Image (cartoon, rainbow, N blue to C red; front, side, top):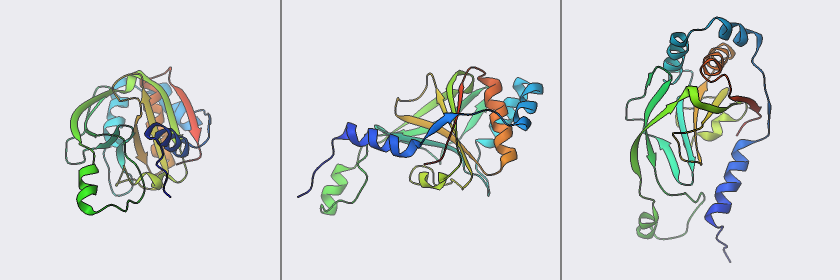
Amino acid sequence: MMHKIPGPILAISLVIVLSGCAAPARLSEDAAALRATMTAGEASRILSTYVMADESRGGLCLIGFNPGATLDYSAEISVRGSTILFTGLFGEGQFFGKTFLPDTQVEALKPKVEAKEVRVDASGLREIRVLSRNVENTKTWCPNVKPSYLVVMKPHDGLPADAELAINVARTAELDRLLAALTHLSPGARLVGGTGM
């Protein structure tokens, strides 16, 4: 006999599984030194660089649970000042797992997805979270993600409550530059670390 897990409980369980253990974190000496001399223009340029994917890093990523959310990788991503502009694909909450229904019924169950232009101001972050292990587990939402670091940005405004915006970088030097830029733009944001997804 199969039991259906209620949507809200499933969404909460996934958030717990994906968030791992969090602990307060501090900038490295290199990141703190970079931030001490950084200007708003430099912070914007760093953000513009790292939201873009390349052969070693996954760039910007949108993860959403209830409603579901992913980044529209066919649309333009840009940064203007401290604001990240992108298109998100937002739908209903997703149930993860196999189904034993006929294909025609599975098609009917697929959530409707709506594309929306999104603006997230990196000067209005309440939390910056660094994940350093198992970041490749986000490939369901972030097909470009590479191992190393995922920097999750939680803004006060701009995203649905269960959606998270993140930037994937590959090397410690990139992480230091990105954290210096984000903490320069949002000096009041809580900086935390976690083990991974």
